Image (cartoon, rainbow over all chains, first blue to last red; front, top):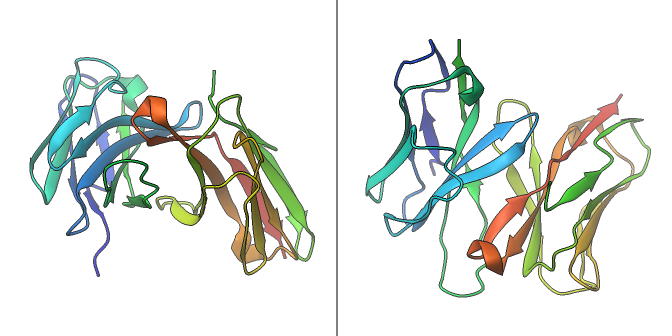
Length: 117
Length: 112
């Protein structure tokens, strides 16, 4: 079975450019998460969706970041305009969550390594 | 300030040695997970612990959840080069919508 699929794997861009990262979650999963990983701050949750609806975006750094999930099989994370401090590895993860005290496993993609010059 | 602290930050040992890494917090967690991440890949779940005092074994790995559900440890017996990677603990918090908050990780290197 295919896991979580992210694209691109690597992106190098110049400051001010728009960056769009893409994610296809595992079929049947109802929750999708975007994380950012840096050496300084570790793995940080940016936003998560449940049944395609954004539930909590309090981790999104600022208005330059936006995320959408138009359907159950696709999500995007957009940065516009990008800045050098956005350089990081961005992970998408999906899970099947039930209401209440869920301890479901997070399945991560391989990540998109972003470098903003 | 990190909600979860992990120690040590880095660990380099010889094949065959035993080791323990720790995950600590002042918060009480609904559950706690351990993940291992290899270079160029996403984290992969190793175990979930839910009950205070719970001990789980996965081959040479032993996981323990503290009685107060604020801390956890991972013990590896007879480490092998294949155990090399970044070990992340993640605590589930009701205050975060039952989402998991990750620690900074312990980077383990097992030398042949």
